[in-house]
Structures are given as structure tokens and as C-alpha cells.
Length: 119
Image (tube, rainbow, N blue to C red; front, side, top):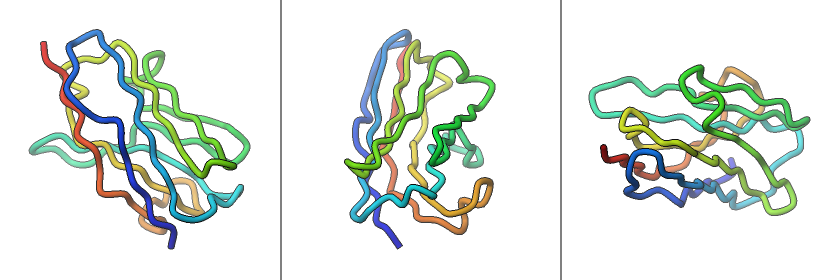
């Protein structure tokens, strides 16, 4: 399995922006599904965004219009651009890459990066 390392998290004020990166140790197959998930304290992990090899994207309703997922297969990197951040976006963000849309359990996970949005 490919190893994933997230970066780009941090502390930002409400309304600010962050760009998360997820670097893969090996080649990101053009058929892999890439996604970002997040987990806030005391809450279940939730899917934030996914992108297919063909560039089709899907987003959690609460982040639509604010977050953008993208991928660069040549750089083996997946990105999550987060704008207009809100305190409710505070969570640990995890990258996932796998072969089947909707089945992150079949793929690889990174260790996560903390995003904290202050009010």
C-alpha cells in the first residue's frame, strides 16, 4: 500500500484559508480514488471531499463552495484548498487513497493534520 503524509494544517482565524497537501510515497495510480476526511473531538470521522482519476469531485454539503479538492498524479499529491474557514471546520484532516469510491477501508490513510479555526 502507498504511504501518505499530510501537511498544511495549522491555526487560522475564521474566514481564513489553508491548503492541505497529501504526498504519496509511491505512484498514485490514475485509477485511484483520493479523498479527504476529518474527525472533530467526540465526533465520528466524516468524508469531506473525493476526486476520481477523471477529476470528478464530490463534497460534503457544508463545505461546498468553500473547499476544493484536486490532484496532481505526476507529483503524487492530493490537495484540499479550504477557504472561508469556520470554527466548525476544526478537526484532524486525513487523506485517503484507494481503489473503490465509497470504500476508504480498502485504501491507505495518512496520519492526519490538525486544522484549528478560531472565532
